[in-house]
Length: 57
Image (cartoon, rainbow, N blue to C red; front, side, top):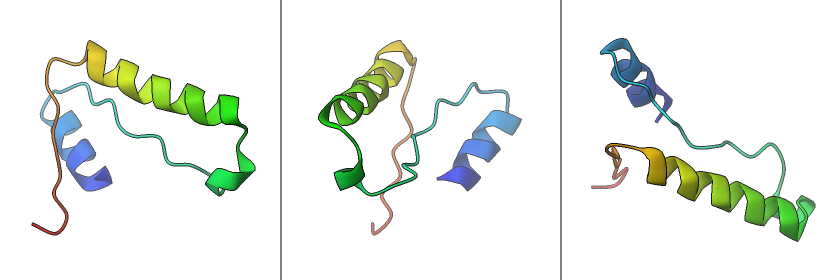
C-alpha cells in the first residue's frame, strides 16, 4: 500500500493513507480504537475517490 500511495502522490494526488497501528489492538483503549475508526471514516468522507488494493485477487 505504501508503494501505491507514493506512486499516486508522485502523480500529483493528495493521498490520505491508512493508519498503521504501533501496538496490539488489546493495548488500545476503547476510546482510542473508536477514535481511529472515526478518523478512517472521515478520510473516506472527505475524499474524491478511493483506491482499493485486493492483495489476493
